[in-house]
Length: 369
Image (cartoon, rainbow, N blue to C red; front, side, top):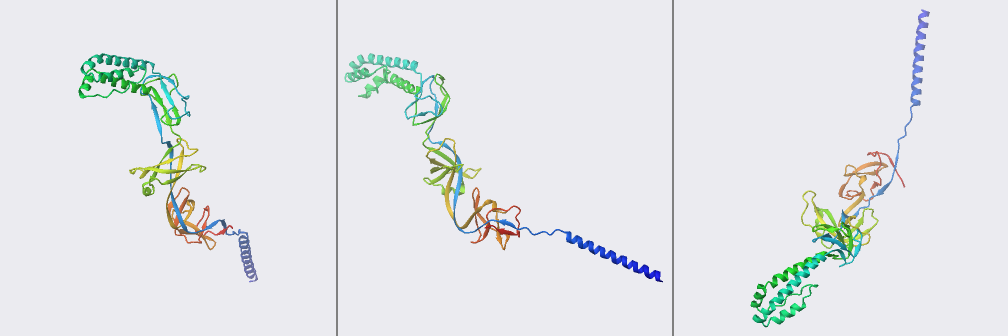
């Protein structure tokens, strides 16, 4: 009996000891668990202040000289002389000789034609004195004015229809116009600058044999440039002839003022854009230079401009409410390259100034001052 009681007491003690050891182990495990503090992210904000936000349409394009001449040869000969070096970048004043092609052989042919023309008039005069005595002195004086080394002077006026038919029948008019045609062609041996400008392309050198139809170079006026822009057709009413447009280079380091001179009435079917042409003058402009245009449009009332990076799903933004982030819906009205104009934010709303990585609704934040 006593033995059974001892066994029972030992069993109870073992059970009690096991329970005590288990409780101690559980207490130690709970005390060893790390205690995590809820992180609070520091953010910078800006208060919303709605106003009338102006819209400006931005478009870009490359400059091209408004006055441009492609130089082609209509005659054949050796490139003989130029008032400059005929190299790219060479400046020529208006009426300066760009290219002079050797025309000695052609001039000799014209002198021979003029001499034959004089011979024709000499043979005409005796008969003219008999049939049209009154017209003879006039034609004698005309013959005396002809110089084989100079352009043939204009024919004298005919006194009557009979005189005209008589002169025509002797081949005088035919010879005269043949000579004038040659004299016109002689002028093509000398290519002059139509305006003061710069040679941008030179494809021949002095001494080169030039052939008809051969391209010789490009000549431009660097004082006036034209910028072609493609603008969304929805803003066509903003592009009026005479409207001033602000222009700048890509780096935004230089600015110019341009003026709309032409607007194409046709909408491009593929891009739904219209072409507008801007004239611009000023220092620092170059052929082929890329410019951006800023065309002012109407203003949006009661709106606010934000960074496009702050938009979530294109129609929501994070705001700070009670020291935590909250998503708020907005109405985007217009998108610029880096910013967006939105409506729907009340004045005084604390909007994130910069996007926060990993932001979520309910995230605890601390406002940086």
